[in-house]
Length: 366
Image (cartoon, rainbow, N blue to C red; front, side, top):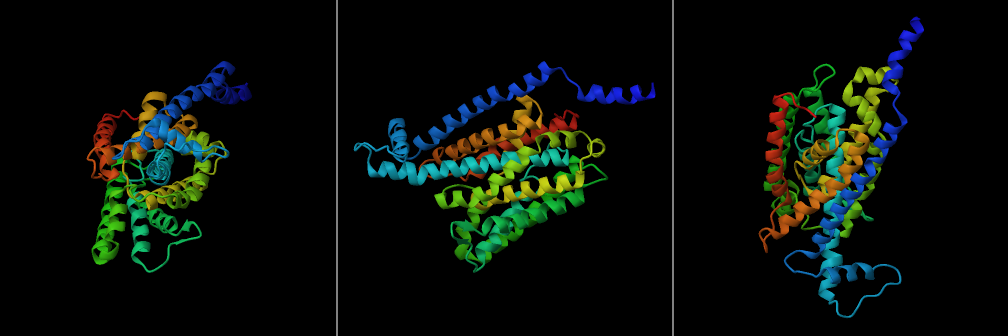
């Protein structure tokens, strides 16, 4: 009788109707297809809209011409080819990569910290990464060779230092209170930004490059920068996606995770390390673009729920779509001038952040 009493709770927590499990698994695909459709629409708009209007037909012909065995018609000018392939396409791909990375790492931080307001920008990771990249920019070290760059590694060092300090200061026992986390993140972000600003004023010859890191933007996007970020962001994304189910357990209770045989501390260090590396790589090529890792995961949770197995892949697709759209606004809203994309994301992110703080105060975490 005692044996039955001990096994019954485990059966109740692990057993589920097969129809329910199949329904949960199949529910991802309609959402993912809808998200991919939204990404495709924003992607095409990013290639066609701008100071120079290019028709959809010409854009598709330029893209198709780079496929094996496909030629290009003579009615597409050289200027159009250059704008679509050499200017807009790497910019759209870079913005999408950075957006996907920031949204994914934001969701990972929220799961590890068990805090819905954790975000690479709010907890000082982005500004720490910007400081690391700035130190390399103002030095005499050649940070690009063989298609790779030292900037993501330097940014990773700054990001990792920031997340370690913030986590150490904010942690109370096995929890990370929201208020303490935000205050620690603001303090570290302020210090990193102050040092970055000092370096910019001291090294005036690199002021433009440093300012682009501080404000965020893709006006210097190129195929080379796309190659800089992918070797760091793609492996990190695979690692985070593989831990979707584990993040579900961590977000509930660490003691329960230990009871199930999970090495909690090692898992948290792994996820924080790869998330910081990916976020740092994104900052090194896109600058400190805030609130992407906050808006996208929470918007998905509001619509489709908190299950990380579905949340994480949707963050990749919708994070890319969100930042491509924000960059499109940045380069067309005040044409021919260009607004730093970090300003555009802050315009949307600050009201959303205040809304989340209001819900947190009322105890309405989701």
